[in-house]
Amino acid sequence: MALSSKRTVAALAGLVAVSFGTVACGGSSDDGSGAGGGGTSVGASQIDKTDYSKWCDMKSQLQGKTVTVYTSIIGPEGAAQQASYKKFEECTGVTIKYQGDNDFEKNLPQRAQTGNLPDIAFIPQPGLLKTMVSTGKAIPAPQTVIDEIDKGWQPIWKTYGTVNGTVYAAPLGANVKSFVWYSPKFFKEKGYTVPTTWDEMMTLTKKIAADGGSTTKPWCGGISSGTATGWPATDWLEESMLRFNSPEDYDNWITNKLKFNDPKVLNALNKISDIFKNPAYVNGGHGDVKSIKSTTFQDAGLPILKDQCAMLQQASFYAANWPTGTKVGPDGDVWAFFEPGQAASDKPVEGGGEFTVAFRKAPEVQAFQAFLASADWANDKAKATPAGGWVSANKGLDINNLTSPLDQESYKLLQSATAFRFDASDLMPSSVGAGSFWTEMTNWIMGQSNEQTLDNIQKSWPSN
Image 1 (cartoon, rainbow, N blue to C red):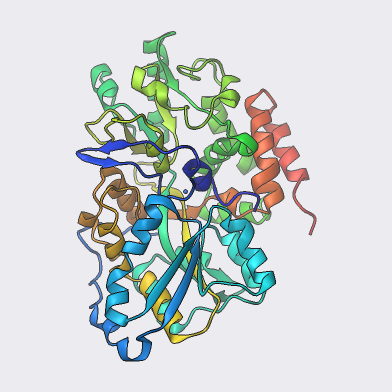
Image 2 (cartoon, one colour):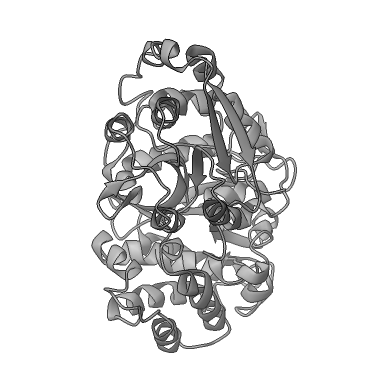
């Protein structure tokens, strides 16, 4: 794809310090790169954490071996990644050599061509995984890795690591996009309550518009992001697709079985048009509807701090964009609620994550890939990230090891989701997902009709 993922765009945005309750967090979101079906209840840990002896028992076989890792995860999050491997290294005698690269998505396919592949790569989207499998260099996951996936992850995660019926990649970290940011203090002062259904959210929107007049608008937004301008608007449509259609419709939309100009997609776009193309509802603190195009996604939510805007739809990684000293929490300066579905019981979650894929078949590589898919690593990684800004969807992760309220909330959503789906545009052909989808949604916010927008995107879909 032309861009690794929308989370990478966010991570490249200049990171700032944010306070999570009493814990300072200076990291980006969930991947930290740069210079983003269940129904189970969430307790301290949902499955028994594996005994570390199973890794230590491999020492006689693995002592002195080296495994190379290649990833886009750098900076503080890269340091936390490396710290999370220490127990495994000490226990097995394996040395992990870590290489982070801002140009990972461009360079990994090139390394396949030159024969200079790492033992394991952390791939941030399934589309790139398919590309790497097509090179013939990716190694199918061994049964030990598959067992860890089956034990600790919802089945959809295994699906995203599977190509042509073969499991190649195991899930690693995760992020949640289905959040609406707001000011708890402002809501309390005005007597507003967090909505639990889409209709309640629209009723709240109308009330804020009536109460706020020219001072406070219900919503703010920004889709300016350089060459990636438009991606936040694709998220808005993706979230709506998950709320007003079935998960199967969403999957079919990604593969073009459900066309962009299908009535189901038009209905989803109409729902967000009711918000983002209504001048009475946007763009608080920034301007009119068209100002959404010129407002950067980093600046989009800042008027919430001045009570000029009440709500912003944006992912968990937006926490990195609040000014230094901003307290993020249920009683803080800003917090986020789950973007509701049609019923209070509906919990469709859009998100993303990384996947580990191996390029060398060796016991030490297989052992490390299995470790990364395990609850052991998930808990080690949480402990190695005391500043927060990271979460896993592994069911064996002890929520008490997550230090920030936002990470804990993200984990709860990942475990209680009635449907979890990856960012759709990251799964579409790059000419659409990182091309026409972005540009046409930008044209849409500038006044292009809903029907024309969807027709144009559909016409751009590759014919083969």
